[in-house]
Amino acid sequence: MNIEIEAKLKVDSLEKVEHKLTEIGAEFGQEQLHLDSYFDDENKTFKKGDRCLRLRWQLVGKNERFFLTYKGAKEKDDFKKRQEVEIVIEDGDSAEKLLLLLGYNKVLVFEKKRRIWRFGQCEVALDELPLLGSFVEIEGHDDGKIADVQKSLGLSKLPVILESYASLMGKKLRQLGKKEKEVFFIKT
Image 1: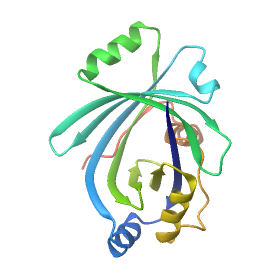
Image 2 (image 1 turned 45 degrees about the vertical axis):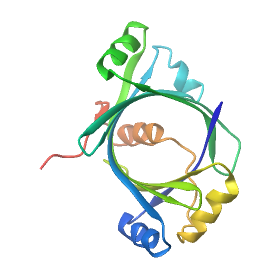
Image 3 (image 1 turned 180 degrees about the vertical axis):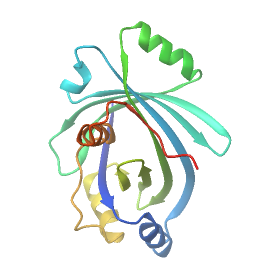
């Protein structure tokens, strides 16, 4: 069983965090573009149980991959801690069709731009989301390592956000009175 442990932090500027990552000797990994589709049944079983079922399309350079991910309910902790099971999918369209045939509905879809760094035995993701803005996610194997990286980045005073991006996006759409459930970066 895999347990995901992460600190999610809202930041004003990803450029400042990226500058700090370079300054402290972090290793840059890659740029990614995600299209995350969340599924639930008509009774909202996953949402009511603080769980999620996500199909992700990920683009790195010209290479695309698909992942099907289940995330369990969050445990009580200073950081966001929950069970996570993720599998690589060869055919995203067929996986989506299967989920729909099994009675799941696509309830939310949104894009995310991500830049991955490594530091202090943690993965540091610099995320940008439409409507929500900029975030830093620090994921590691234990709370101490995550807290150390957070401190090294000068982000210790920021509150840790325990909500998922899906939850934050749903709240933002409701706040804006939007009925659509698909959110993309504006193409210019």
